[in-house]
Length: 255
Image 1 (tube, rainbow, N blue to C red):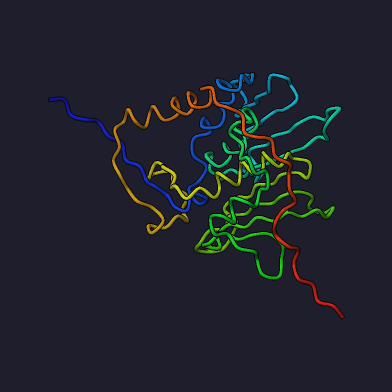
Image 2 (spheres, rainbow, N blue to C red):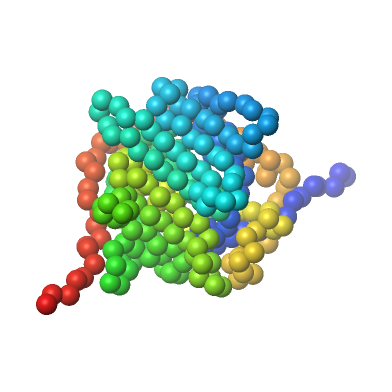
């Protein structure tokens, strides 16, 4: 009888603190399922992917001096203003994939394009005295700020031990709501994320992880199965009109 080969995994919950993960979870489906083209420069530690219509580009550029490693940019068109979205190095790729899957496959986007909707359904609550929502554990917040100093959506996850930011994601004001909603749906998913126990962020505590052994083949097939799911035919969701965020503005004192 041949010995079954297994690999060790750490299941991390909440998923927001799991760390970046394998970038291929985002880039491979963009290329294979979305038909995005890529350049290749072996002398540069970066990835550039362009949409088939050449209007959207995703750049992954590891830089120790820059907090934002992922950047998605869409050029101006006759029907829409340009937009930009950025993600920190330790933003879990499974959560970024909620955004990119909705970008390449509208059928993966939530039918409700309110980015707050699924967060509220998962127990997120309004933050006292400020705008936006906080996760049930208080580690992640999201706010929509139309002010000139911060136009768009800002998501921040903190380390539990010291309260410093683990990662941030930002969506410019003109980012289509269904893309932001794809991100928040993946963010609010209660399912834990699988990680190599040796590559966890230092601040992840033992109470946030569960260890398990899985067949090596199962772990290796996960990305291939993801690509197949994205390329499988599926009906488009019913069209819905974007709604304003459901969280009221912060309370302000009157004199």
